[in-house]
Length: 219
Image (cartoon, rainbow, N blue to C red; front, side):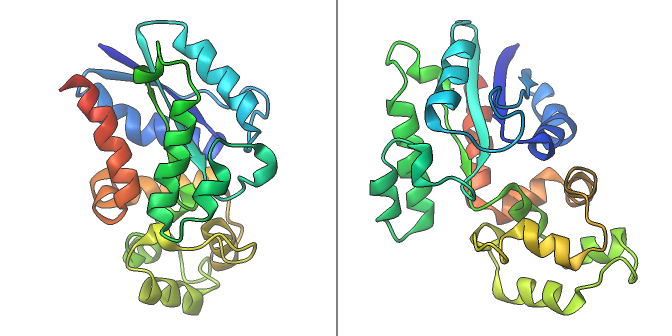
């Protein structure tokens, strides 16, 4: 059994790992654990603190380590490697790859091959904008108080990962406006379970690349 630690930015991501990713990978003889970033216990932290967690987990030579953190919220003050190079790259998919490669390069080369960095563009909640019917099937008309905005999002974003990182236009902020009483952890996983992992992978290329990388550990 291959063992993988997914260091999660928050409880929402951890619930997603436990409920959606764990059953998928255990069938492939890959066992997951999903701890939170130790310093913050929820929310992004600076690279040095995250790196400390990564190195500690990598001390077990039988473990692979990856991350599930949002690009939204990371700022220059967090001192992620190659931050300036990444911010100068207009293509955001390439930008994520620059940041991830910077993280990987900053880990000692003796254990680097067991580290698979991943940053979700722009937020975990991007993955929930896959099928508008999922919203209609899982919430009442009374719950969906932003139907016009919901329709507009699907009209404008064929790739959910490109829903942007503005303070009011990030995926999580949009969900808070669209669904009455939106709870990130509970409602996020209701939507994720209803959508299903394969449909999320089919519309989110960055996320799919990450899942493929984990699957390939056993190939």
